[in-house]
Figure (cartoon, rainbow, N blue to C red):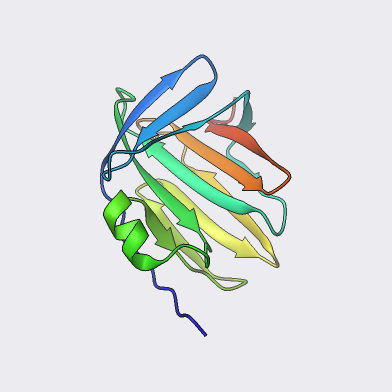
Length: 141
């Protein structure tokens, strides 16, 4: 059985444009998460069983940190080389991914919550082999 660990994220280049988000990994690859971006106020409960990626940008939207939540497929060395982080949580556990951004596991669902006063933007990408959905967590109105 292979073991996976938490991996600290690096700072990645980010470009937000026309409902999509491009992320420049440290290994030279660029991955584009296609929109449309659905706005969600305060917190997002992802569908159980989905791969969940959380991207927090700086206030200029040129840099960010990307963390995979409960990804058990990607080898630690690949994450280390790409700059992508990973956090592994059991049901009922929670952690702060970035100041003002909390993630927790409720049953089999991942819940991501962002503080209203957070500088920058918080994007959540939920995907599996059938497709992907993209969200932006915004302050409650």
